Amino acid sequence: MGTPVLDQLRAALGDRVDTAAATLDAARADRSGHGAAEPPLAVVHAESVADVQAALRIAHETATPVVVRGAGTGLAGASIAGAGEIVLSTLRMRRVLEVRPDDLLAVVEPGILNAELDEVLAPYGLWWPPDPASRDISTVGGNIATGAGGLLCAKYGVVRDAVLAVDLVLADGRLLHLGHRSVKGVTGLDLTSLVIGSEGRLGVIVGATLKLRRIEPGTPCTIVATFPTVRDAARGSAAVTASGAQPAIMELMDARCLAAVHALLELDPPAEGIAQLTIQTDGLSAAVEAEQIAAVLRQAGGAVAVTDDPAEGEELLRIRRSMHAAMARLGTTLIEDVSVPRSALPAMFDEIARIERAYGIEIPTVAHAGDGNLHPNFIVQTAEIPERIWQAADELFRAALCLGGTLTGEHGIGTLKSRWLADELGEDQWTLQREIVRVFDPRGILAPGRVFAQRPSAPSDPHDADPHPAEEPHA
Image (cartoon, rainbow, N blue to C red):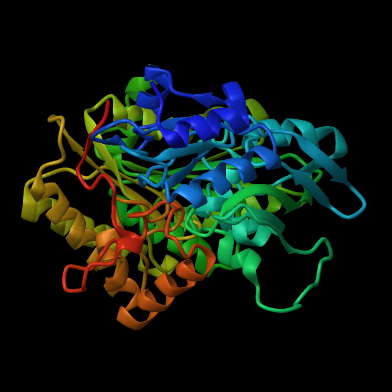
């Protein structure tokens, strides 16, 4: 049994319109652990730009909400879809359309996975720098839409630094080509940067021109430093930054994270209470830089080991990349994402300890210490996140802001953090950003209720109404 919208979608797109119960149920949730109360209307498996345009024209004409979805690996609830919504999936659009080693660029479709792209680029001696821990399962389009980062951002930049151009389909089906292929380009307003991190509110990313790097020669060196406390480890990472060294990777794991990952991977348990820094240098000067960093860490009180064995280095990084899986084994997890200036990392860990004491909870935390991005984890044994955990998270967000930081370094706002967005932006900027969204999407059909949640004191605005306000944890 169909509806007028479904009938139009099927007439235009045939079997690419999927209403199977299992497909709809999967689209209710992402990796945040939360889900919509009811399933969406349909999932459209777009295979081309024309498919995306056709679906959006129908949605625009019928005022039907649309949620864009890639691999569904987001952690902020941006791609969660509910009752009455169309899910526009770009996961089947995964071609590499062009690789230009001479210009250090590639043109790709949004559905290609990060790891798949690097496999394609490797024979050319090239790679794309953004390196999320979920690179084996996350899509390039999703990285761009959420501004996702990862382990290598401190040295090689964030997603915004690695995208030259974006092809964007607007809510009414029009196709825009934003950006340029040249190294420089300042014609008009920078709409490419505006789209990066917009979480599906401005349009659907259907293609991207990526800025590549050459794979540097030399053998990477990996450094492991353990410290008696997580604050000591944070001071050690700040000392490395202050020394002028620029490692490719600098990751910090507190004692609870380290123990959980060792248990998951069936490794010998670490010494009780210790925190660990895992650092990697690359390029021709990797060995020299590694020894310089090791000296800084020893001076800061760390127990340090250095290896240039690639297999050992990869195993050490596997420990870090297994963090989310280890947390998931412990219970229902709210994986948070705040960033502070790198010099403020010790103070932020002090704030986390204060919040733990105040609420009688543990908050296992891992950090991209090289760029000041922390991922505190709130773990509960109930299906729903209790209100006191949200209160603790509220204090955590406000602490990050007070230290000169931000609500999110790479996960995005989505639905889970929208209530705090205006606190960081201020009322004037929050209002201006909503008005920009309205210019791109006058009917308000793209991801309504995401990012810009209605302020409690503001009058009702249908443009940002959430069609499924009640959300629930979704296993």
